[in-house]
Length: 168
Image (tube, rainbow, N blue to C red; front, side, top):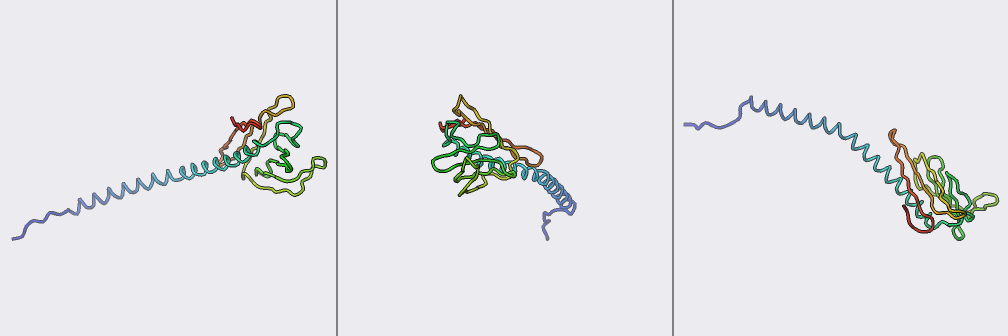
């Protein structure tokens, strides 16, 4: 005599298979909806970190900048140029790139000789400097860097106290 074997019916297998396919389809739809947002957040974070790196490099140079306004070659909203020892340092926005120039600058004919140009930040759409002063001495410089990404603007603002090594 044979024992009855316990098994699954064809109907229950079909129900489980249908439910599994539905759950898998819902999971795939959720992942495809979330994935572009994760990519956008990653790009935004990368842009922010690149702006931070460029700003940190600029701030490091400003810690060695002179306090006396007469020691500066250029102090405008878009360009900073000053002399440190026997070299001159310049920061400016050139074709959506934050550029650092170091070398010998002749203040009289406004020409560079023996210069090294390096890009501190790329795809920067906005760069401005605001000078804070007390009589003929600089007390600080406010920096604003901006970058556009997917119709959004990322902006970093920082104020640096000149010659004190303290940043606010």
